Image (cartoon, rainbow, N blue to C red; front, side):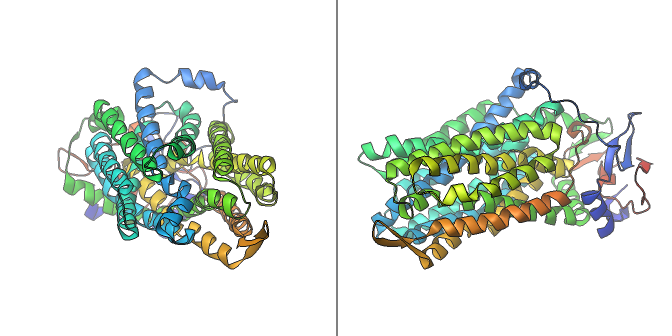
Length: 505
């Protein structure tokens, strides 16, 4: 079957696939068929140590490389959040002026996701990720030498391009080689590389920055070295076996060409636009949730609650400990409760903790609020890596997941700016002085986002029975020069009833 002979999926078929779960799957006879797969019989809750023991040493290597690469990326991003008030003092501007750089970073991440996602699905995970990390290191070190605000803005924008490529490549490298039974648990651990990076940055900001002459610049210098170290580790790591092995999964598949890759990518976009739009909307809510609860949080504690730099950093660290715990636990439970159920539960519980997060004035209560809020926020996020992989067209896991993630980032890029600007327009009084009330703005924004996330998670259904190993990478052609796996993008509108199947031809 050639692309010219493929009737793309209609809107109604795409909607049925998204909402009702129609898909290609391998049936009990070992034949790949199209229809609505039988309900999944969820296994009892497994011992997490049993799931960990299922992972081979080589699979551990790929997971840890992807996890640490993502942690490095998060560290580099949060350098600005942690030093926003210091940078504002250094350049004699308002904190909202500094947080504009966060907006610029988020806006440019989508470009990086497209560039490095295509490179990752076409040429492999390893070398695109290596180049990505080298560039991040250069931009981080360059930021540490900035003397002007305009140069700072420019470098943070370029950093955003490189940052945008890391998540899709890291998630694909870390998860695609794991046993299916372990993917939920390790998805939660992987995503908490984000919280781990934030935690490391907070610790460096707490203990190193005040004690060296370079001050805030040392935070960025350390990040540049951290990224360079990760690039070296990626260079030593072999290529993802799933990427290299699926070139020969089927006997007739002989070669991958760049032209065939872009032809298949066009087919995917034409036949999966509903899924693409849904994934972007979903990730917009997720990113509003995380950036709305994290990016301005240290500034909120210092400005609205009157915390010292030391106490604000300690509270941030406590929140990130909660994030790591929540992401790991919820990712693990999603393997048995279901991805959507876990996201909805975490979002609902998180909404209930908003008062504890913004109303207290003491360190202990606010720190507890930070812990439980980030437990829920990153608990929902812990499901995202594997959920997006299962939502993705199998041949485009790096591109689809990465671009959806970063387009959501781009749309939500104004989160910290909105909070900073609105907070300055709603003053409150702290120690007799009028200051911005960031807390009430953050609480309202998160309440709205939690509600929207629950609605979207209820709608979308992933492909939980997809075997990544049974599909080729994108752009593989057979001996006749035709794309393989093109049936994934073909119309199947004759299938209108639950349980119906059509065998692959």
